[in-house]
Image (cartoon, rainbow, N blue to C red; front, side, top):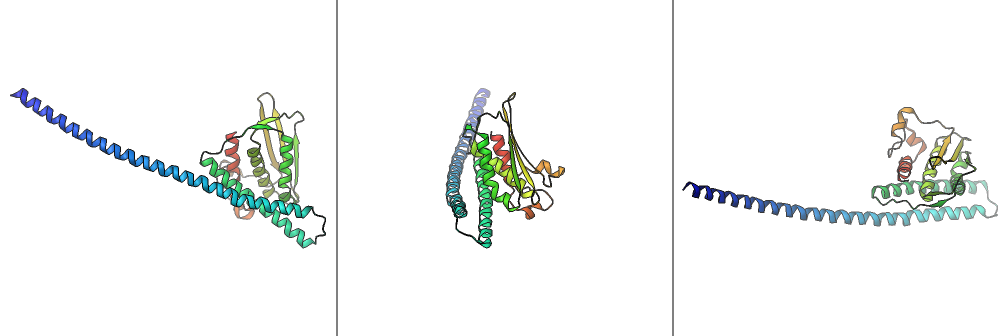
Length: 251
């Protein structure tokens, strides 16, 4: 009788445990379905984000590039210009360049956060890259009569880099330097190659106000531009140095 009672109790416990296990399985299945639905929603949102970036890239960057191209064509014609026309065109080119740089930084950060920013390494000539940078930044520099100079090692080899992303790095550093130097200041780009460690070293320096020591730990964080109110004085999105850090680390 005792054995029968034990077996009966054991069968009851097994049945209870089986019922509990079945309920747990139903809960897990329901959670799995909810998780699958959430993953599908996230994938859909990522697709929306990709579509949004593609639209932004085409609808904003392309017109801005066209504006700059037409302004450049206008400035190269030999028709006589009055000082007012020249001043207006210069302002248009400078502000279009600033806006294009801000849009590029926003899109670059969005690509980095979406995990879609990849390197396209290719053999690149550093002298050609620096010449291009100086040409792009000339309009910003001319407005403040800032002189941009460059120094390159004579034995600089052809290097494997993503030239578009390195150009973005240098454009952000140079435009940031121009922003914080005084009228008729100077900005210097230095390119060296360390053969022992096979490292490319690019340095941008200026004779501006510099960076406060207490701000140095924070300058590469997004939307940070120092604590002295310089953001409103000098403008910008506060993403330039963040993009520099992300693209440098990507390399």
